[in-house]
Figure 1 (cartoon, rainbow, N blue to C red):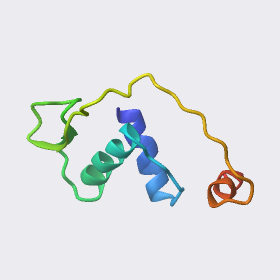
Figure 2: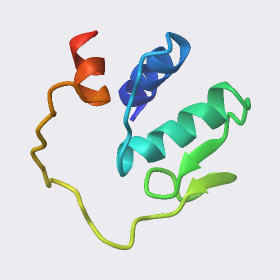
Figure 3: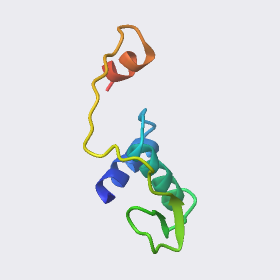
Figure 4: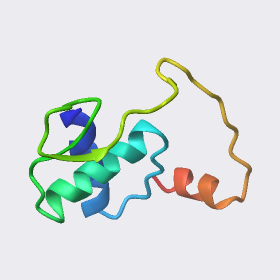
Amino acid sequence: MQGALNGIRFEREHKVPFLGTCGGFQHMIIEFARNVLEFSEADPAEENPTSSLLLVAPLTCSVSEKTHTFTLTQGSKFADMYDNF
């Protein structure tokens, strides 16, 4: 998880557009809480159920190991962001 948090912190600090869905969004919450709000004990329940500051409850449905394909539409904001990085 720390590698994901490091990447998210870099993106936030360098104003890189980032779309976090599911676990990625949960990691964004933890990264922001730890590094901006200075809540060093912030953790998701799935990673550390005994944490003194649980910010993300376990998912009720598993999406682990699932992948999806998406297509960028030429001229869309997402396509423009991808072209710029």
